[in-house]
Length: 303
Image 1 (cartoon, rainbow, N blue to C red):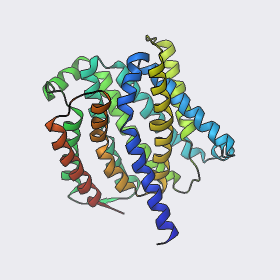
Image 2 (image 1 turned 120 degrees about the horizontal axis):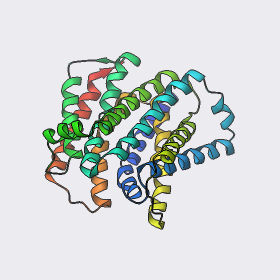
Image 3 (image 1 turned 180 degrees about the vertical axis):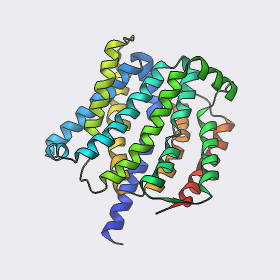
């Protein structure tokens, strides 16, 4: 096996690791936000993750190289990255109650599909007919995995959209921004050694902190949410985004993005265990649909 093939397999596995780490994000972030608030938690998580990353880059002598990265890569990828982070936390923070948070999360889970669609014009992927049914199956699985509440209905979703549109719009912007970031990161950064994730995280944390200053929210600090905040900042945030950044630039994009359809399913399972929520039959059906949709989407795209 050639070194280039082994290297691509390794960078692909980093993308899969990022998805597994992200799957723990909602469960732990939810308990952090219940104590600190969405804006405070988001600002603290991203600032801590960004500072940790910059300290690592400085200690390893890579910080100067990161600062010399192409400006086009930094501005385009950085803009989409920060837009995703800020938009999603604003969507969660502006949501009225847990029911709307669930619906906002459902819209945010459209990002894998947007990434696959954006890969056609940006990365010159060539789809065939099976991309559409694969996306439909994945959407169905995402719907079942992310909507465990039996009272959920599309009529309720549309009514809530009319009553409080901004959170849904921000979640849609977040999904679009992450799909574009993933593709442009590959298109502009495939030849870039090292990434600027730490700088992007610092920028996102700074913006959320500024919003927090002008939009105060109650925060209750305690040992458990503080420990969970550190976990979310270092693993599902810093490490996961760093792994995803490398994988999108040098790994098998179609395979990683197809597997990312399992994120809402894995996240729901972990959330059920962490938050002591009982599993449902919908979850088993969602598992079949998500896996089937991911496989069909993977097979529908080629270089």
